[in-house]
Image 1: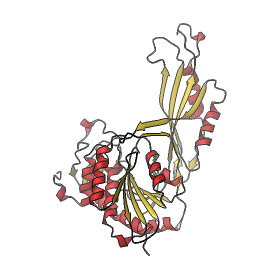
Image 2: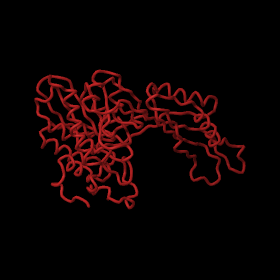
Image 3: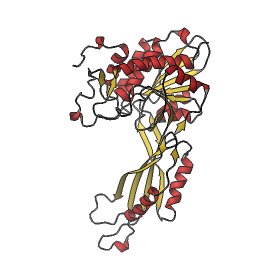
Image 4: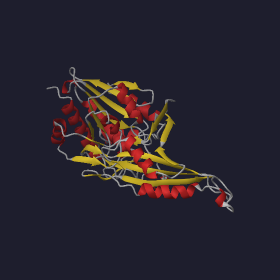
Length: 381
């Protein structure tokens, strides 16, 4: 039976319910950003909205100390096939010990718990600066907007909220999108020998890329290189040899792979294929503030070094280390050499799915986990 009154919910569940009810596709996070900013102000956090629309809430502790930045993204993937949802994607219904709806696990649950933990700590519980970032455009342009947050608010430690089942994420795969282009020459299909069929070149290019050996990591397994899109021009064709063919590959990266060497390896395997080249996919969009945002799709993998802080966090959280097979905003911090971790309620299996949900007990446990992490990273002693 669904719970109808927010008063029957814990503060973190009530907040998560409020956030889930506000749709927030990438570039359309404005109404949600306004709601989060209002909540932060009411909770006593100093609020800032940056040029790209990410909302930042700041608190100062007992005295000088390091800066800890907590981040969870505002945007969600679309709610596809809404008629197939048992619980409407933006109703935020509560039943069976779960809160249902798009973004509940990825990552409005994490954001709600971070906000409740940050607001609930007394000033004497920590030293330094605590920043909660509710960032934009993570789903389609991972780390692009968050890297701008880090430029304006340099951090000593970063904790990113993603569904890790409250395990401490200490490693993460990266992601790259590679666009392969094959140039040819058009001709009538009754005389194909007068043209240069770009699609045939692409068939060979795809075979060569698929034959490339993939790296392996003892914690994260094997890398991935998967063909996800192929198209030729002109389209639709009325009997023309294609003059252009493009293919897009999705790669999941392991630590140690960098943009330059990866692209050189792909272009190297294409070798003497005339008119065939590869480059990273370029993304751009206008943020809800009207500010343009752009990136090349190369988001590096990372692995946290074995440090006393890592050991201490594992101890106080009473959890195990987790290597994420997905890609997150954390790459923007890890690439700068900042001690970076993942932590959040829910699991990746719940994210992006029909009838996405977050368990109410995980939400409450996340508030406690974030509070423990804040006190550990910004210890007043």
